[in-house]
Length: 82
Image 1: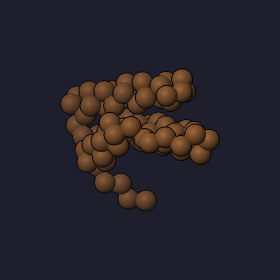
Image 2: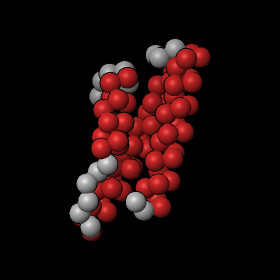
Image 3: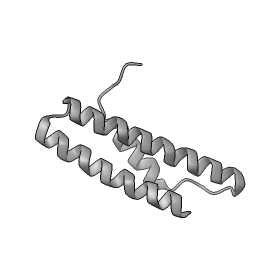
Image 4: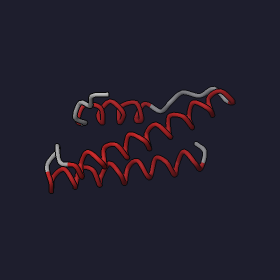
């Protein structure tokens, strides 16, 4: 795993913990929790983009734990209308 990917994974974990702490304190539908969730979404998108660009250079599989993490995040995140 490249350093940038490791850094993004660490940022994702920190933001995820922050989101859960905010949700416990302010509720899952609070503006603060939703803002954390959106920031988490952006970090996950950055990570996915980085991994995909790296896979084009060197084909490797996305780690199973990340796929599970993404699934879990989608399950707990409130539905958003576009």
